[in-house]
Image (cartoon, rainbow, N blue to C red; front, side, top):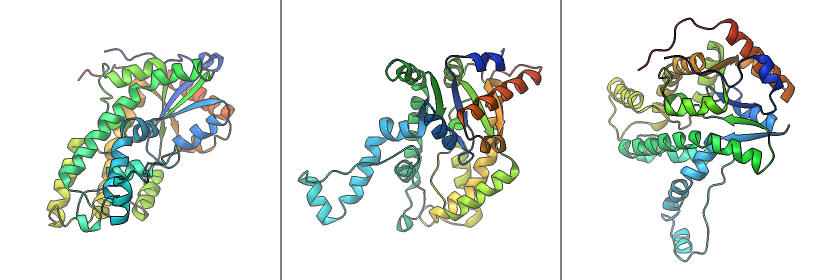
Amino acid sequence: MTKPPLLYATAAEWHEAAQKRVLLFGMSGLGKTRVSALLRGDGWFHYSVDYRIGTRYMGEAIADNFKREAMKVPLLRELLLSDSVRIASNITFENLSPLSTYLGKPGDPARGGLDFDDYRQRQAQHREAEIAALMDTPRFITRARTLYGYDNFVCDSGGSICEVVSPERMTDPVLATLSRHLLMAWIEGTQAHTADLVRRFDRAPKPMYYQPAFLLDAWQGYLQETGQTPQTVDPDAFVRYTYARALAHRQPRYAAMARHWGVTVSADEVAQVTTAGDFAALIGRAIDRRQQDMPDSPAAET
């Protein structure tokens, strides 16, 4: 099938647009949230998909998880049952720890690990929530303009966006919806960026979302390679084992999203952005590159 047209067909069209709307995607840690916050400070509406997931779609589950732990403490149990205290998530655009903590890591419960079936259930919750939050984007574009008066809009997507869409399928409902309303821009990292992300993750391993088939394959592979049982797995060791594999799994999916649905900017270019004007110029150059290097063959329908 024919690729969908970009929202802004040329750089000139982008620069002249009264309403600039962009979705940033790529690996976490390459500048999506930094640039989005910069634009927010210069009159753009900042829509964070992860924030939306952690508040609208998984906020109750996150709070219930906190309460479940608090109920194990006699004093807090008494206060909760008498409705004397309130426990809530304090999630922000910059601090998404409540969401990642809820997702958790599988393995030994004595080391904070979750039963693998419970872990997979939370992963499924995240998948459903992420799709819903992405599909909310057009409504927030309208809301930003009609309620708050923002013409320019940036969608700060989560690193797992490529796991909940089918980039090669031109009828993918999420990508088809997003591409009609925003210009999708991939922040592409180099091997050096990837190595740095792996080093940072190794120092502080964090929960993340994985595509179901990839997760099951990684889990079974880890058990076979280490000889561990599901109850003895070190949760941090498992997510360290999985992280670099997850990045390698995601890279071609990001590339396909950019190839069929958007434009590409490099992480090094993004690092140089310090103003909204810098960002507009960067996107204009990316559109120009796209027009000069259009692939000849359309995407295969799968």
